[in-house]
Length: 70
Image (cartoon, rainbow, N blue to C red):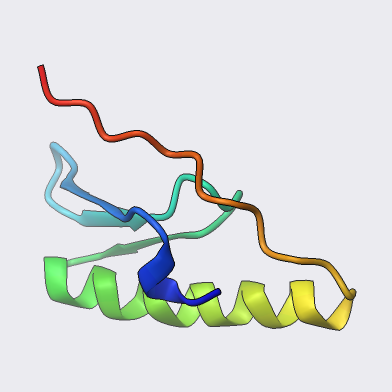
């Protein structure tokens, strides 16, 4: 399962930095000055975490994130 198989949330914090996160994977987030940098860094964090899971012989968590628009 790859990076593109997960819902990604990107938002700007009040004080300026951008956050990119994959809610389905604990600790999979990035905080950077621009949206593009946050997504790029998030991709690297995702690959690092997926390697840790693979090294332990565990599957990555399934994405159960539901995007709701009110």
